[in-house]
Image (cartoon, rainbow, N blue to C red; front, side, top):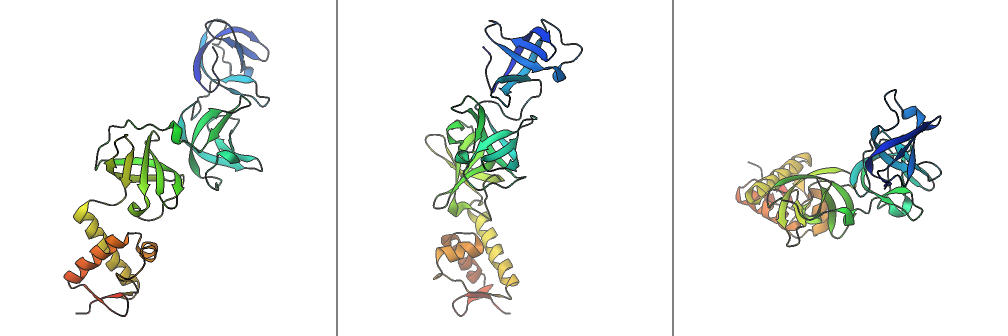
Length: 278
């Protein structure tokens, strides 16, 4: 059977002016491989590795060009154009891949890459979607404190960033574990903080224990230097204000400030902290 959206090996049944007609083993279907893709070696009976997609009228068409994504897979694709009906992505073929507005999770930027899955819509055409959670797996071999690479595919403000590790495995980076700006479509390097019972990964951009405390203390000192030795933040500041300034939680801020006070590097001053003068 000839399968839309998949790479298959088909046989040349006959050749016409418009191209070669390919068939599967059962010869129940035929699909056209356009003449411009034929080589001198292509003749009746030869088997070819092709990808099956739709032409502009929705009919099945074969190509020797291998796409960057196949049916049911996830890939990080670049936005080539944004129109009134949706976006079009570069998936390696001459005809760009459609991403409908209803399948988008954020405002897209032309030239940026986003994670999408390939599916067949109700009209029988290939389309892409940013709603990839159902395509992700939870059977990774990663364990606590492993370093992993992934791409952010969604952000929920009160929860955090959802990340496809290796573009395969489902994971969550909680908001209080961010360091810096996290954006949909961006690659990200993180640490596995824990593995849940169902196999999903909880991630963190923060280091373990004393290493993270060292980093937070250094960050506060660097910012104090940038702001002439004084910052209007202390243990009475709101968690949101602290996060906006330092991109760390209030708890982490208090621990780092406590260390700096103990090391006699800073002091409390006028509803804030300042570098302690010698």
